[in-house]
Amino acid sequence: MQPSPESSPTRVRHGVIGFLALAAIFAYLCRNCLVVAESQLRAELGLSEQQMGFILGPAFFWAYALAQIPTAWLGERFGSRRCLPAFAAAWSIATAAMGFATGFGMLAISRMAGGIAQAGLFPGAVRTVSLWVPQRSRATASGILAAAMSIGGAIGAGLTGWLLGYFSAATIFVLFAIPGLVWAVAFGWWFREQPDQHPGVNDAELELIRRSAPGAAPPRKTLPSGVLWGAMVTSPAAWLICGQQFFRGAGYAFFASWFATYLMESRGVSITQSGLLTALPLLATVLGAMLGGGISDSIFRVTGSLAWARKGVASISLAVCAVLVFSAFFVADPTIAVLVISGGALLAAVAGPAGYTVTMDMGGGNVASLFSTMNMLGNFGAGLIPWLVPRFKLWVDESPELLAICDGNSWNAVLLLFSAMYLGSALCWLFLSTRGTVFDQSPFFRNVHDAPAN
Image (cartoon, rainbow, N blue to C red):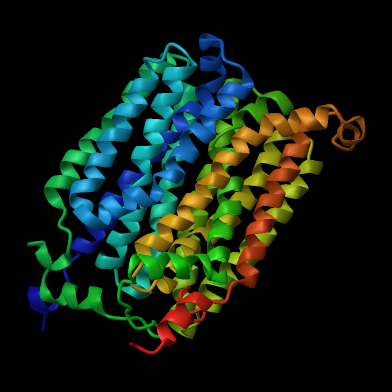
């Protein structure tokens, strides 16, 4: 006997994840298109490496970081259906504006505007996942989003390198702005804030979405602002969650900023080859994110243990990633070196879904606040590396002893710095306690919570 249509869950939640994944692809397409084009654009506009380092790094990532909490608040206040299309339209327009830049100032302003607009995407996406996806499947959903970021980054790097043989950088920036504008219109028309508001969701899907996973913590109420931030600042768990994102974001930022230039100046590859080779670790990140989400959710379903499902998966994969990136220092062939680094990138990506999902697991009723704080500090790390690399290289170049250790090439020292970032992230995970929420681990919160009422 076949079940009636109403007895089987509908699949609208999969459409929601699909839309969010497309948004991540289009965001990273716009974010990474400058990475391969930077050397050509730097020459056309007469910019220095330090100026371009600021545009690749702080101009985008620090604007992105500082806008995390305000845009998360907008998403909570006005909802994803209104805010996500607005953010997508804004970052698309900012990307097109880079093509009309005539100097450092306009290029920096356009890059900052893109960072501010993209800041609201992932707090809104994580909040949407927490409303639309069953808890036992959230790491998989987070893995899909993380994979989509890398797909967009890989397309941005590889396609830009190829298109530069036919079009100017300005034309490419305008072309890459179009998909985000189309997405904004489609998502705003189709999406609904809550599953029970969508006409395509039946009772069976609604019940599935609201079902808790084995070992899940009970839902918590949203904390008042004064208690929330006091508890966040005094929670060791919150600091470690933010710390792992800081170091992991700093490691990933090397791919999104100087990696193509590193290949050209250190390994002697062409600009077209650099675009294709830069795409390899980004594509490895796609596979790693998908694997990481599935592995983490599977372990959680079997054990009910966040320590094994989030902390164990992330700390082990990041530690091995650091070893692989370090070992590339000793590899002379550029293709083999990139393959080794890509293996490290795959393992770093395995940890990514655990980082996103642990904010849902340990954020209580304040998931968006914990996630946006974590992502803000992660992007301070991501902004630091592009700015730091030229200065770090200069420091190594001015030290004969260090330069000799690096075989006369300061880019080799940058590779070791890159490895250290992933090791720092692994250590943060190693010391994290996954018991309760981040607020339960705060002395401030315990004092307020246990204080007798007047």
